[in-house]
Image (cartoon, rainbow, N blue to C red):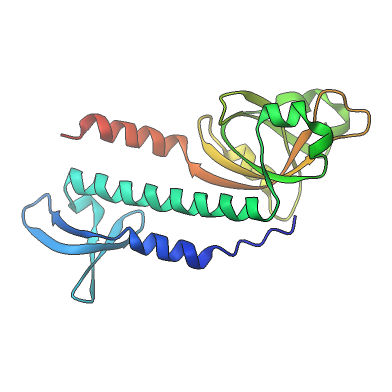
Length: 217
């Protein structure tokens, strides 16, 4: 796969454009006027008059914590959208189970991506003696809510992608990038040989967001 992700500049502008004036409220009292600039797992950077101010997210109000989470989700979606647009312009194909199974001859050796929910390790590959030795298979639910059980990664690569698969949790939302391969004599459709996995939203993050939504005023 020779995809070049050249959307970094556009993405950077999109992320900065999300920043907006905001009044921040602290749980122990007091407020602060400033623009969201960036955030990590435990702190947020707020810019005011050209100066960066760092606050612990845990010290902010529930509403402000939700505000930060929303901005980060929008940033992630902007990155995913930019990446998908770039991949499509490079000739890659957005894949689904139906597309792979119904048009295998047109997709053989083609590069693509699939946004899906991880279900479990296993799938059809555990029944295929030709693949089970050096491949690890797993099952996902694609964006059309169809279960696809023919995702595979190569074991033992320097990228340790097989170990990444073994660490996934049911419900993790992923972007899978790789190539469709149709083995000679294969009649049941192609295999998706995944070479890269991006986390869109972990099952843990989703659960935390749902809990936050139920407790928000």
